[in-house]
Amino acid sequence: LEQPALMALATRVVRSSIRIDRSNLIARHMSTVPIRHIKKFTSLSEPEVHRILDRAVDMKANPQKYRNAVKGKVMLMYFEKPSLRTRISFETGMYQMGGHAIAQLNSVAPVGSEEPVDEFAKTVSSHCDIVMARVKLRRTINELAQHSRVTTINGLDDYAHPCQILADMQTIREKKGGFNGLKLAFVGDCQNNMTYDLARAASLLGFTMYCGGPSDPEFQIDPHVREELAQMGGNVVITDSAEEAVSNADVVYADSWMSYHVSSELRLARFQRLMPYQVTTKLMSAAHKDAVFMNCLPAMRGEEQTAEVVDGPQSIVFDQAENRLHAQKALVYHLLCGFDAEP
Image 1 (cartoon, rainbow, N blue to C red):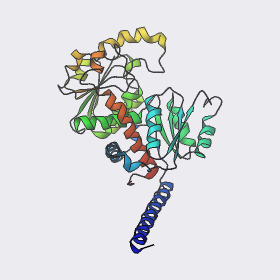
Image 2: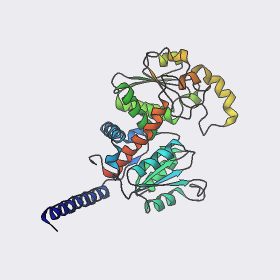
Image 3: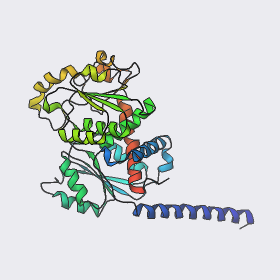
Image 4: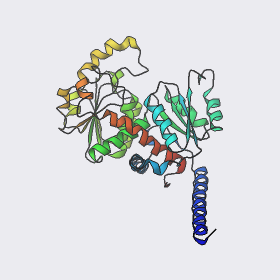
């Protein structure tokens, strides 16, 4: 070969060697990252949350930078409860970062009955690098974390929904610029995983949250969660007035009145108690003029909110849904690669 051709060949070899060395370095670093179990939003520290949100913004703007970020890594996604956004976002996210995701449905191998939770956790730990589980009860997440030898992410249980809240915090930051001085109002059934983790987020990140719902015990925040929030010292206010909750709010949030665990036999009685907390255009008018409306979906028009609200100009529900992808990619990236990792 002539001299210019030899120099070009040498340059390509050096560049290829650098890429290989960098891939090997990342792989070695990932093997030393400590195991973390994300059971609820506050399983993460405030700096870690901001790190994840910053990374999610970059991943959303520059997805190509991360196409090999978790190359060769495998996520097991276990679904005891139905899923749309959770499965699509995690599976797409792993693919976009060079990894792979396997969906294990409870109907195939019921965990907790035919397959003991501890055996399931130990088995999948020997095959996969990270586990995401969407389950009915918090004790299942706790058991999985106890027996797993790899990082476990709570994709949803009756006590928390950290992945949704990360996406919500990314969406709020996009629309409102940050959390300083922010007021979020949640109205409806306050005894659910979304209210709990939103309240944890408010306490951790320093914004104010009003929870407006019926004073009946079955609609109120669990006493153990109240104690947890009190220990955090956050500004979470509980009221039975929807108007007080929404007054001058920057964000108005609603969630299903018939969560997956609620019996259909209770529908009529629940709706009679919850209808005063339906988010209508009139109720939204009590919030700031530039307030946004959020719902983690699916949204039942005519139930927890009217169609005019969820389909109206203040609604950002599909921004929330999109950001599930980016926030979860960022979470998985840092859990597998470390919080000091760079692509």
